[in-house]
Image (cartoon, rainbow, N blue to C red; front, side, top):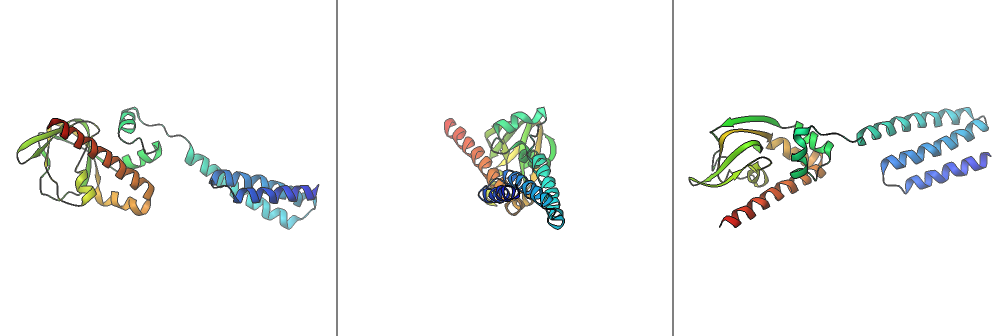
Length: 212
């Protein structure tokens, strides 16, 4: 009996070493530790049993934490369309984390971005529309789900056009400095953000080309 428990336990440790998913790895190790703990009880090895109980407790706590992290996150109804249409490459949890780092703002018939001026924020239109004005001419109108000042964020260069609120506008803004910190804190999410902005710019270029 003890030989069976030992072999099953160590075989599961071997299997766990080949598993990449952390949750599965810890789950297999948990079963392995139960087998080895059972062997320790059968052989009355109190010292070994103590250590396996400690391993089990630590592993169980970590599994619970992993399950909580992976638990599906529901989005507020007012953000569902933005996630589906703009931030779909992010998980719900990633999107909410990113969203909560921003700051809501509103404006009415005022200039939000000045051509040639350096920008320190990246913004997204929530309600209303903003006019993109270059050399005194309106070249585009942006509505809900459209970014502005994204080129400045991606290149670090001054704004290439004026952005003016066309009536009352609500928007969300993120500090560029904080967003660039994502590159070190969470490179995967930073890459996703770049992809989102690249898609937004591509859509604007296609729209501009269609008007020519």
